[in-house]
Image (cartoon, rainbow, N blue to C red):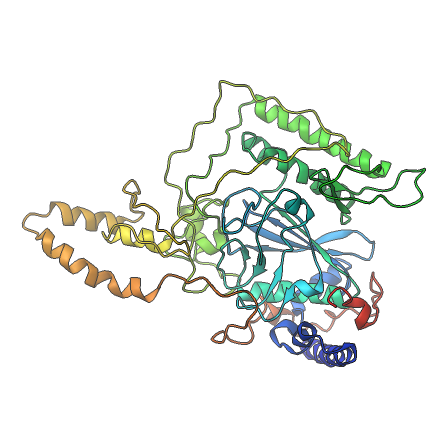
Length: 516
């Protein structure tokens, strides 16, 4: 199986090079054709999963991402024509807060619906491999939002991006590449603050971004009831999903994100299914609010989140704004295998040691009635975000050195004294330093930098990386897939035999026309 996959990848590379030469030697296409990292074959384990789920290797994909759960999902079209979940990847690091990106430099990872075409796939990334999310889209631009180079990439380092391990992004990249080889012009990328359930909506009901979240939830509902990629348009500075021309119209409606919406309809079968789901969700939401479900605490200075499987592997690691039980759960996860290599320079989010902000209970929260599928929703202006510290600030506090900033921010955060050292050893050290009779505190202060200089210096602050357009020279050229290929290496049935692609394969020129 591995030999056949490698052979197919090599043949594909040769075909790509030939096609590029005929097309005029486009630089990006040549690099895609000859870059070894970008042409790693799909793992045998994933091929076996596709066979089990009735998927073709080159059928279309769709990507969904959830900040609070710190998960990225890859969905793939089955031979029935609907999408099914292929694999869920834990996110190693994301930055900012729950809510959309507003401006360049706010360290926010974007939320919304974006389209990824072949030209956005970057095999020359300084972060191993990456693809550009396409932020800002027409909706973002209509609101005057700014930002660039917002990626999903490797290296587990985020300053406004979604960061995976190198092994994870290699696998995700290969799935996107195969979908383009199969004829998909672009795959949809849906980024959410959390899974759009009634429970999460109720917990975050007082968040100033709720109007925006309700709007993109409608797109989520369209996908969940149809298991089809929703058609996305923009008008009147809002999202419109699955719009079609009216019965008396002779041509499809033309949308402009900043202009008035044209006349359009939503297919009745889709509209009805969405209405039923929204009514069910609204009823459950109202019950939760009536029972007084606690309102989620607001950001108290944490910069982003990390899936608990990664937080468990890092000293003083925290999930930050992502969900995940601490304590014994992280300790148990620390014994398991991480899905990829975690760089030594990873900067985890700070733990939230502040008391939860009390939710205003004096004013009743009234649930809005379920919206019709074409109801227009106004967007809400996101709030300012604050940047957080990292792992070495906690390490410095534990060793009695005060505050230390090793994040990519330009200004260090103020030192905090309310944080309780997380380990018994650090508490014992502090007690001995303070209360043992005859102990020379001035000597401790003098010697402390020597004791801690080595580990602090070993992990220097991460300088901002250059634009995501070059290859990191020090990084190994290839990383193995996160899938366990050894178990399936001898499986002769993993290769799909006689499977007709869902979308027909066309010439290279037609597949990559968007690049030119």
